[in-house]
Length: 391
Image (tube, rainbow, N blue to C red):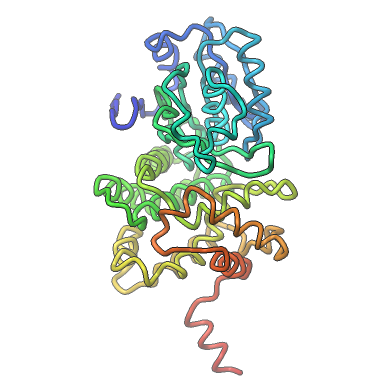
C-alpha cells in the first residue's frame, strides 16, 4: 500500500480505512472525537468507521451541516471536552473535516473562532499547540484532508477561512471504497469542485511550479474519470482517480485560488438557501473564466489540453458543456440566488482570502457583474452570433 509524504502523511488505497487504529496509536491518541454528518450516519459509513475503531474509546458528533457553522463547532467542542477526548477524526466531506479542524483549534485556543479567520488577521494567532487530527474523506471533492484551511460560517453570518499550516491534518486516510455509494449528483458536484481547485490553482499568478504540475495532473485525472464515476459509481478505477484528483487539487491550492471561490464562499453562507459548495463552483466557473481570459497568457490552452480537448477548442464552452452533461444547474438564478443580494455578496467576495490570488484584479463592481453573468445560462459564442443574425 503506497504512503505519500508531501504536506502531511497520506495513506491512499482501497481499504485504507483499516489503518485508522494504527495511525491513532502512532499519534498517541487514545480517545478521538469522530466528527461527521447525518448523511454519513444514514449511509452506514459511520458504522464502517466505528467497526474499524474496534474497542478504542471514542465520542461522536454527527450534526455537521453542509456548510459548517461556528454553532456546530461549539457543540462538537462541548462533546470533546465533556467526554475527555484527546484527538479528532474528521469523517465525511469537506464540511465535516473543516469542522473537525475548527474543533481541534478551539480545544487549545481561546474563543471567539472568528479571531482566527484570515480576514481578521488571525493567521499569526494560530499555533502548533493542537491535538492530533486524522482526516478521512468520503467524497472526492474538497481535498480538505490535505488542506491547511477550514472554512466556517461564523456567528455573524460571514463564511470565512481559517488558514494556517498548523491546521493541516496529522494524517489523511484516503480510501476510495468509501465513495462507492455516493449518489451521482453528489459525485458530479464534488468532482467539479476538485476540477475547480485544479483550474484556479493553475491560473493563480503566484509562482509555484510544483503546485502547477500537481494541479494539471489532477485536472487530467478528473477530466478522464468524472463522467464514468458519475454514471457508474461502482467503477473502482474511476473512484480511485477522482479521489486522487481531489487530493491533488488541495495539495496544489496552497498556491491560492481565485474569484470562483471568492464568490462561492459568501454564496455558501446564505441561510435562506444552504447551497452546495461544489455546485456553486461549477455554476460560476464559466463567468469567471470569461472575466479572466485576457489576464492569463496561454494558460487556457494548457488547461484545454489537460481536459483532453483538441487544439483550438474553447475552454469556457467545454467547461459549460461538462456542467450541463453532469446535470448542474444552468445559473445562480435557477438555484434561487436573488439580484438584490449581489452587492453584499460582492463586498464579501472582495474581502475573501481567495480574491487576492485571482489572475485579474476584481473589485465590488466587477463581482456584481460576475454574479449577474453567473445568474444567466451560459450562451455559446456561436449560438449568440446565430441568434443575433436571426434578429
